[in-house]
Length: 384
Image 1 (cartoon, one colour):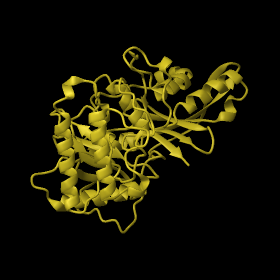
Image 2: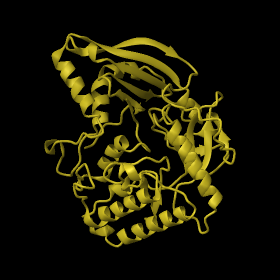
Image 3: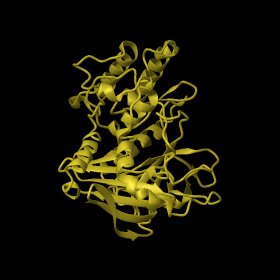
Image 4: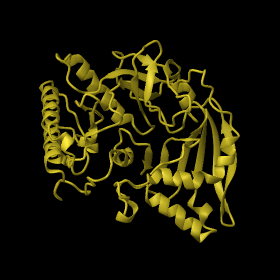
């Protein structure tokens, strides 16, 4: 499904289990539009209200497309993209008035995280959505990003970077700064790093992740094991941790969950990946280090077809690790067994997997689903 190059970049999407109000955050050039959507604003039009609620329902993590929505190539439209396309249509004339990015300028995380914020909502007039301007703020951090960690957490072993020290590369045809930056460069360093954003509610996850990476660093594995590594912490002037700087794994976004088990080209690689994952887990456990949330979506396959463990924030995912075994060696081993079954049996039975696998869906589509299902790459924030 070819899509026209948008003039905006999608940032965090916010929703709640309490109601059906939502919030879009999109970047246009070097500005961020915060667009609050209230269900009550749609109630004057039954058609628009139904359309809005349909889009909201499709953002839920458990949503799976109907067969009629999947094309012959096994692909379907990203529901988050669809919602943005629909809501932002009346905003396009506003977006086009904004000056484009300066290709000669070096943009940083400060430009992304502290971009000028333009606050909008929408109202219904007749059968049309109409943007309503509410105000703007400058030089303030994105309200959704950044967590203050407990003072007892010591991460002095890692470099601490200010957002202005972390460059965000943009291409010549970029229409906007990335809503969620990932590939970054530390000032003065030639090799890229991966920026893992920290949201306001991520204090516990981030604390555990930093402590685990500290243990990995202290273990000094020789030879190194195949895991992501913490290279630094991004912190603002007020002491909020805005994100983690991790080793860059060149993988084009491919996780083990992207692998089509029916593709014969992977037949000779499955055992290699299982061996690499097993070895990494065994070495971690020998130093009392727990992976946590062991699942195929937390294994990256790089361009050399090696398997790297990522995401040490803990937790569990139903269908991969039982809740009672989360954050334990038993949980890691259960996750490993389910990864083996995933690679060699293609589908997990109902006892181990709560959601059917769609093995025919393309890698790009699976990544779209993973973005909402896996907290490591999620751009959806659910408020409980």
